[in-house]
Length: 193
Image 1 (cartoon, rainbow, N blue to C red):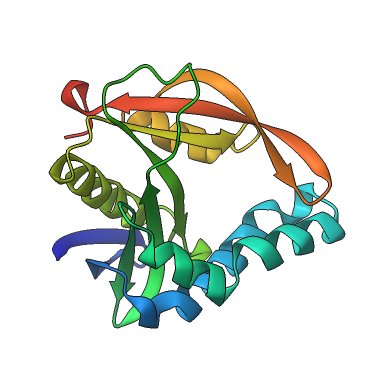
Image 2: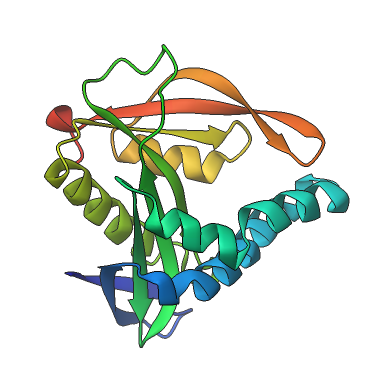
C-alpha cells in the first residue's frame, strides 16, 4: 500500500489535510468502483453528450459485473484511492495492443484514472498516478500510454504535467457517437518518477 498526504483548499478558511491510501482492488470493490465511475463520468461529460449516448456507455462500462471481470484480468490492476475508508478515486492499468504511434518500450495502457469530482485538485489524481507508475515499473513495463478525449482540457493538462506527450489519435465510441481521443505516452525512464 502507498500512503500519500494530499491537500485540498477549503475556501478562505485554509487548507484541509487528507490522508489518501492507495491499494490494489479486490472483488469486493466492484460495486463501489462502478458507482464512482458512473458518477464521475456523468459529472465530467454529461453536459457535452446526448443522454442516450451517456446511458448506453455507462451501462456497458460501469456495471459491477464488468468491473469485477476487469479486476480479475491477468496482467491488469485497479488501484483504489481511499480517504476515511471511502473510495474517492481509482486507476486501471491493463495490457492492450498499442497502436503504431505508441513507440515506447514495453507499453501498458492507463485505461482509466477517475477521481471523485469533490476531490479534484486535492492531489488524489497525483497519488494514483505515482502508484500507477510504481506498479507499471514493478510489473516490468517501461511505457504508460492512454487515450483522453480531445476536449477534456483539464485531463490533458494533468497528463502533460506528468510528462505524457501526444503521439496520435483514436476513435472512442460513446453510445452511437464517434469521438476523438488524443493518444499520449510516457516513457517511464524519461519522467514520471
